[in-house]
Length: 213
Image (cartoon, rainbow, N blue to C red; front, side):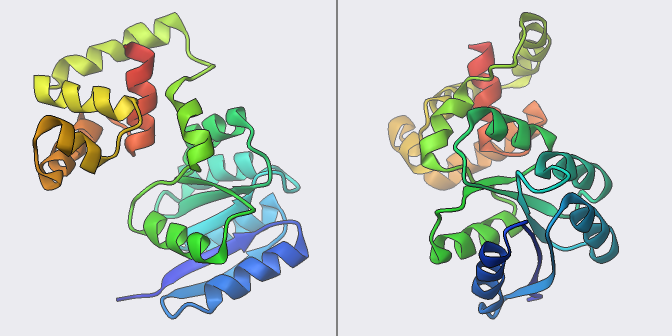
């Protein structure tokens, strides 16, 4: 299996060095570049097309704006946002522009490694302390809700049931237990739900469901 190719961009040298050393020490992760600002992030991503890029949300040039451009120009690269702030608006914005994960800088080295592997595998991550806030989108409008509600017509009754439980914060195993299904079956339903709603992950599906219901 090929190594996970990673770029780390953060304007705090000591923190960036720590992240680079932590990730580079893993046999399946290769840090191919590092930088300190949005220009570095864009140039390196365009040149190297990493599997994963870690972006400081508050670096010079703006991590959110860098994420927006990278998601549009280099969709093969999965984006992880790094921050010291638990700002809910930042979480919403980061996910909307294409980030797959929102990581607080107080995270342990072991957890950061696991997050990088999970994101590379196509999963998403938001700290549990912020997950609940994602069930409400402060920027939503009535017209947007009306427009999105039509999408739910494509869901079967079982898919709607699973989505409603997802929106309450339950994991696949917990949903399976409640509905007397296997976890594998729930995962299968979840894949169908994400495709029908045209969202990338469980978090976005939960946000959308909460706006409609």
